[in-house]
Length: 254
Ligand SMILES: NC(=O)c1ccc[n+]([C@@H]2O[C@H](COP(=O)([O-])OP(=O)(O)OC[C@H]3O[C@@H](n4cnc5c(N)ncnc54)[C@H](O)[C@@H]3O)[C@@H](O)[C@H]2O)c1
Image: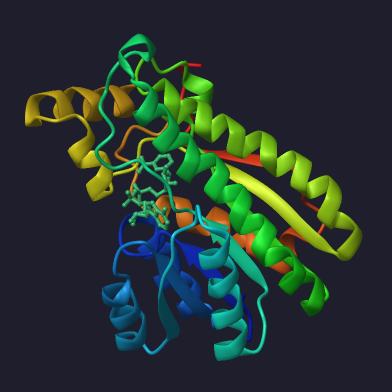
């Protein structure tokens, strides 16, 4: 199995993409640490029901104490850490407003979790990956940074920061055999995405548009993202670092 005997932390694992990552990594032999500010125990139950190994942790990725404790708990439970998928973010419930209608507090909230929180997780996990003799960090950005999306500029800017952070981090951690890459998923049918548009008519419009503007004309599901992240965690991508892989079914509108 691709991740046999590896321990992988997935932040934002309570549902959506984080749950899909957790389920697949466990199937590939990993011990999965399912970390979220929300309760991730349902994800852990699903992993265990499928015969996998997982641990649920309550974590706020914006707080150093919390992300440090997450890494220590992972090491205590499974003996070390081989990788982290920095997936937690403010995405669900973001208002689809243009940049000039976003207020200060909302800008700070989104940047704090998505950009600073991702940085905080990279910082906390780094010594553990060094101790392990190498590892892989995968940051979840968003294809919205390529698209010129007229809405949620704070979210788009925060994910641009995640991309830029990835390149900086990769330059530092490479010395210790650690890789850092990002992915930019397209519009994926998680519960968070379904709720984003506000009403069913607006959702249908977004849904149809996303399908029309892809080379692969169908809806994108969480499982469409999982394989690329698995590859970035695995030794098959051993010489790939500082890169972004865009996983969006071939969008043609940017
Ligand atoms: N679904 C999409 O279309 C899409 C597209 C591109 C990128 N993404 C990104 O993929 C990731 C997952 O998206 P999703 O659709 O599953 O959304 P989601 O809202 O279900 O997942 C985000 C998770 O992060 C957690 N979280 C929020 N703040 C946190 C904090 N401070 N500390 C710890 N956990 C926190 C939430 O509780 C939630 O479980 C996000 O980074 C999102 O920006 C999603």
